Length: 450
Ligand SMILES: NC(=O)c1ccc[n+]([C@@H]2O[C@H](COP(=O)([O-])OP(=O)(O)OC[C@H]3O[C@@H](n4cnc5c(N)ncnc54)[C@H](O)[C@@H]3O)[C@@H](O)[C@H]2O)c1
Image 1 (cartoon, helix red, strand yellow):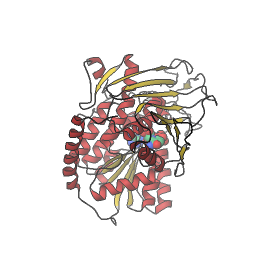
Image 2 (cartoon, protein in one colour):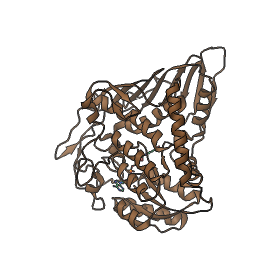
Image 3 (cartoon, helix red, strand yellow):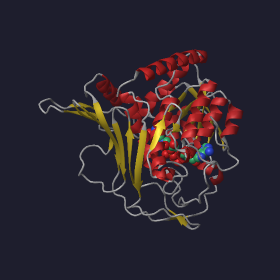
Image 4 (cartoon, helix red, strand yellow):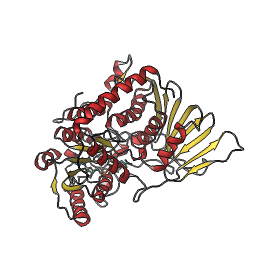
């Protein structure tokens, strides 16, 4: 956890360049109302849209989804909540061309983050895109490049960077209260899982354009239940555990906690990554013309070797019980002065190494529903647009955090460790591993170039 002189000089040079670039964006009036659109009208997209409406700085001009049910229910909510009557679209390219939005929220599944974000900034919009930044590392690199080329603000939805207890945990660490940190353990443990029973493949509901939903990713058979269209299967929400569309729990939850490690310690990237895991409890993945299971691991560990510390990720989706006390998600920072658990709904707690000293605690301050801090992150997004500055969850920084998750997945797939050059977004001396930094897109979609 030491900033070397070379890196300091490089980041100082980057800050000067960033300052120059962002001055061009220019300051905008706080009274301005932004033409705002949402692409991906599911669970989290609606959570963000609600805060955008509540902030009072948006006119909602367009909604886009490939599921007409999500589109209709979101339009109804917008009309009820703020009186706007947005136009609805099945294709984000039509929305961008016809509505010329100034702000676009991207709340699609992970495999659909890159192309709409890149198209939106190229069309002149500022973007609030959900984590993880991309499904493969090359997508994230292309998104950073597109954001900088278009000189737009791109905020990523890692709201923990603005949650009051996470901010105070960072201050606690950065004022030296932990001493020297040698190790961090990040984890998400959700118990109760058993063998996964394959779900039947069925015709997608008439309201869903399944080909478009799969988009640049391979087209798997649809396996949601027509009787219960909002639960189970790949869509909605279940895509997280299907590796064609997402990257399992490490790609989903891991980004939040690994980002906390980078943000709190000031580290940028590890020099080496190794990960392993599997499905001993869920069982081998199934994919036939009749039925399928998910294919993400039911547990996984990943180790990140930094210059001055080791970071570990651990996910387990079974054996949930009270054997391990405390919160089931978060990160433990281990320092010479004690151990700090930074969690979610339970805030943070510091256990000093000197047992005569008292514990220190900080409660969480989260918004409902879903215990998040989107309101604060949206306010920062508007502030960045108005003031012409980088947002708290700037695309480049969360691209780095996303890379930690994606490198873990890549190492697990390869079955060996990889040495990482974060300055170049390249794996060292390993052409086979470097090929996995991107993937072939399903036509007609084209992989974004850096
Ligand atoms: N920051 C957080 O804490 C947080 C929490 C939850 C979800 N998320 C992220 O939000 C994203 C969405 O997750 P969700 O749980 O809301 O999923 P969801 O399935 O509820 O919603 C996704 C929506 O996108 C639509 N969609 C798919 N392809 C599309 C396309 N090409 N154009 C337009 N719409 C398309 C789907 O039909 C669906 O309605 C994920 O990337 C997830 O990681 C972030």
